[in-house]
Length: 241
Length: 326
Image (cartoon, rainbow over all chains, first blue to last red; front, side):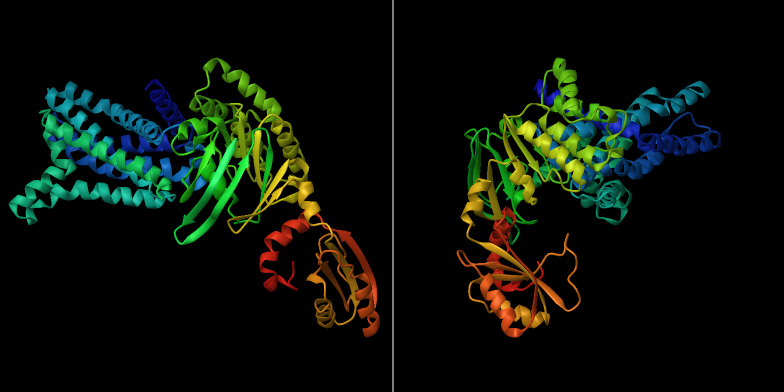
């Protein structure tokens, strides 16, 4: 078990290095902060509300829709394209360690992006008295949602040696999950409630209200588990006879 | 020891290798030789556990390469074809990364890295990213990462492709140096490499093993075969027809141009390979005299390893290559 953790961590460090040694991490973090900051600042005094409902409910989920596949697209696809995947999988490491290590690095990047938005809750706490439960729940919800997106993105990156294809397929899967609860009005009630449960937005809304329900957390965790499992399987696909 | 048993691999409807069998005893340097696309790389990918065979089995020190995948991978050092490397890492960072994943004790990392840097002559390149290195240095980094854990088995797939002649000599010396105490499989389509470094040669063609023996044995098996190079002044198609018509001529081809001057206008240069034991020089001279062409040059040489290789890999479809430009 120790060796598993050590190997996973080795991959995480390597991925983080390549994020931060290239422009990728900085471009993503800067753009993320710029866009969220723009929407936060431009609406703050108009709405005159000490909450981050817009940011949590609409802006960040929308931005993550584009940013997450951009973070994950090269993670496995690039290794397949350059052939380094052959070096990796002929080392005495398990495929699951490779996937988890890379996933953890992406999570850390996502966590840093969210952590860097601390100025927004700080600002509204100074200006008014926001519901702290809703803030905590909102951040938790965003992190879980982003984590689920990352698992999907990592999975699609493992499907192809082409980063663009990885980005687009990842985007499409995330987009469908993202849109489900926004189109349910056209469906009959029974189907609508199922679609609502499958959608990523519905659970985020619950958490952002400040109600941390284990069902919502479990939803995200199972989504993460499912797509990480599929990512490992896609890496193993070279072994299918 | 590596035992390869009845190995077959299909890619969809394509059969890459078929029923390949061989054993490499500990300490042997094996040259795995074949034209491009013959199945060398496929075989290596199966031995290293990158992918499983469709049928058959690979045993490394009596352990199945699939069932005991991790143990087998620990024993092997592998340089894949085209030397894939992380271009955004530096040499020390990369070698350390590999050592961590190989589970080598942290206290040994610096020592092992230093030894590989010295052995592979990488000392002057330490400040650069791997992506900035020339092809020759990258190849050395590839060899260094394959050797860093002092593996019992070393598998190098086309280690000298794309290098200039000086670099080739350097890498070849390095391989010789490294191969002394190890089981080594060297995949290549370059013959002098095998002649210079290997104890034993396997020739694979179209997924099947077609020859197995020491370089000397293979040459000996082909002895009695001669190559006759002739340059004749006269109409080229008639000359070819006449040469093909000689009984005992196994193969007639236009002579290689590399190195030699192009033939004079109105002259043709051919290589005639004779069947074992036949000396065709008198016959050729007779033909030239009868037709009143002019014989400008004729010389005969014993078969080289190149010719053995060519006979085995091209000879299989001699009909189509007969008289072709080779």
